[in-house]
Image (tube, rainbow, N blue to C red; front, top):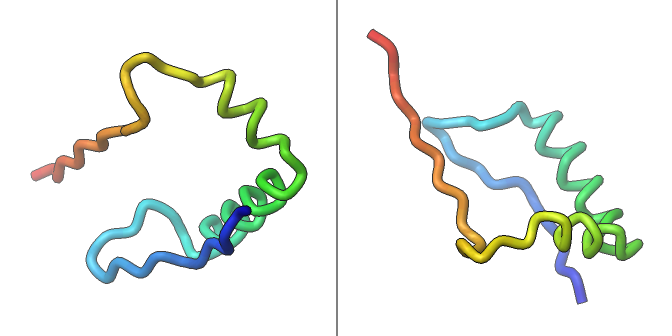
Length: 60
């Protein structure tokens, strides 16, 4: 059973706007309820694992 997804609050850093987060989590919740997430997930199966690494750099 899918759990509700809420906003993650990080004071210093933001990867998206609050509006993008709200729309994205609403879309994800709908996809989880409908089962369409499973087909998308299957399209991205990887032998390399389930983790994504982001590297942030500042300019200047």
